[in-house]
Amino acid sequence: MDNLDGKVTRLHTVIADLGSATVAYSGGADSTFLLAVCLEVLGAGKVLAVTEDSPMIARGELEHARKQAAQLGARHLVLPRDDLANPAIVANAPDRCYHCKTTLFTSLIEVSKAEGMAHIVFGENADDVDDYRPGSRAATELGIRAPLREAGLTKAEVRALSRQRGLSTWDRPANPCLASRIPYGTSLTAEALARVEAAEEILQHLWGPIQLRVRDHLPIARLEVPPEEIVRLAQPEVRAEAVKQLQALGYRYVALDLAGYRMGSLNDTLSP
Image (cartoon, rainbow, N blue to C red; front, side, top):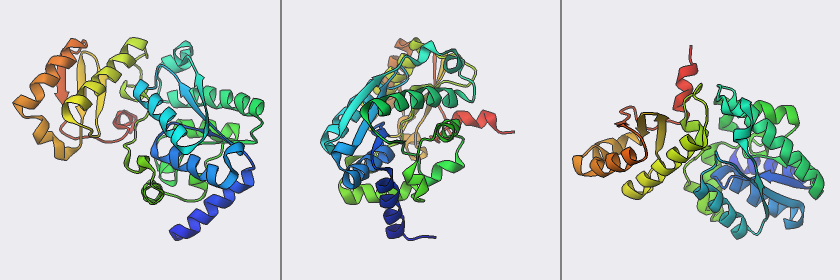
């Protein structure tokens, strides 16, 4: 396996060859590291960061992306998108991400052309190829590049390199769109997405900044937290206020998943 220095060199080469780039920017660890390297290699005048503003994006995530892009000194555009106007996305089939990313990347192509950017890049890393990611198919079909993956950089390596650079996102938990909390086959609504967002904000306030997901099986809220946190959060004095506040959002039952947090747990239903 290539050493880390070799991967970084390859990453710089891939980015330099782009000439200029629009970065699909979420504010997460991968896209922030990618944006930082693009700015270093290409220069600020040859880089544009674009963040989507959609009902499926938590307001806190959008604000974080704004602040992070500003700290990096990147030119940053926020692209409004009404994903809930797209029936293929609202249907929430297992290939929802394909339809979502197709419309997003198509919009980015238009923005990039208008801004004179030669390529579009996004923060997929080498580990992502082993996950179920229909959005990656959309990227391939539309010619969207993934420099981190092309350089062979894993998530752990991106985090390590981000820490070396002093990027505050080096240990930021992954936080995909709110639709990832809704079971496949359950139509997406603005109400459901807002309910999930509010529930996770409440729990982060009550429990502290831990990795968690509220999986929306209305009338049930299934809470996923790190396994080592389950005992603490199951204590009566801890769980009582959480139950009270989540029931106020419309959930009748609040369940703590004993399997603990795992990324993409709703994909379990796709296994044969």
